[in-house]
Amino acid sequence: MIGYNIRNGRVYELMKIVNAVATEGLGGYYFDDLVAIKKGIQTDGMFLIGNPETKWHKKVRQAGETISIMLILENGNIACGDCAAIQYSGVVGRDPILLSSIYKPIVEKYIFPFLIGKELTSFKEMAQEVDNLKDNNGDILHTGIRYGTSLAILDAVAQATNRIPAEVIKDEYGTTPRETFIDVLAQSGDERYTMVDKMIMKRVPAIPQGLFNNISKIGEDSSLLIEYVKWLKNRVRKFGEEDYVPTFHLDVYATIGKIFNNDVTKVANYLSDLSKAASPYPVRVEHPLELHDRNSTIEIMSHLFDMIEQKKIPVEICADDWCNNLKDVQDFADAQAAHMIQIKTPDLGSIHNSIEAVNYCKTKGIKTFLGGTCNETDLSSRLTVQAAIGINADMVYNKPGMGVDEGYMIVHNEIKRTLALLKAKKEITSV
Image (tube, rainbow, N blue to C red; front, top):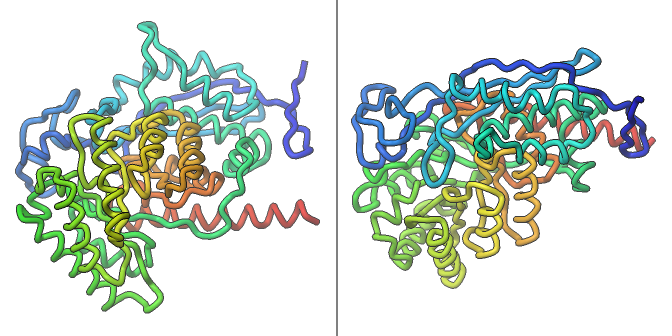
């Protein structure tokens, strides 16, 4: 018996997934061992020289890996999603690096039997089911596997119902999609001077991320970061158009807290100095400090947030590490532990968790950064944009990679295409 799906007054014949294929692939960057990096390592070109400290790392830096999931639908269409894990996997409670040789057989053993023969009904319902799948040991599958599978399901449901993914999210979550260009944060990697020039030329809304993941990059006395911000301001003034006012978003990987021994007053005063160095450009600092566990990090970040508000320091702080799942994001939001939270999509497993995290943060008045990692792919980056527009997030990442040009082209063009399509389809339905 043929089933049907009704969406927005239209009837769709339910379509089945008739087969599935997985293939090993490359990520857009590398798996880097953050524990080893923070302890101090040597560099030789792009190579990071030292002994790995984190599970399954054979080197401090090794090629990023992904697994592509391709779902063959009844009508012959192919829906795709890429399983990915972040650059700094295996730390602060995250799942280990996603090695395709280990995890591709797991996809084929546990994911494919669940999906093949299944009718495409609701993205949300199917994504929730995938998120709860367990292996024979009773363990939930790797976050990256659940992420990539949910992206493939989102693509499949969209194709089966003649919608784009942003529309699927809008319809299933009852949201009002974004109608204007969404802010994008570009990533410079360690090329934080050359890459800024690219960002200015392309008028990237938020720059430069910076990869300040070691004290040596901001200075033992923190002065190097102040000098960098001054340089950044002068560079934007010199080459940027008058109406180009980017946010200076600096990811410091808790190095500021380490320099000041997590003294919140000293950290707040330093952030004030950063804002003065950057003025008139707005400043946002990601992960300024952390403690040894999730709850302690929430507490100290909340304390810093309160002090920033009380002193009226014109700086925003963004939470990142220890926001590893939906509950973590909700707890950070409940504690008012940041002005913005990065919802790191691969870490949250199925993309529906990231969507619900955005929704929750909105109820708390907290800005949402639907982020991810430089180690993702063109496909996962485009589907993240679709999700961000469908749920009306505040910012997305320039991903994949650290080269700026390629990642920004992928994300920028997908934003433009999606906004144009939503507008055109809205005009058609209103006739």
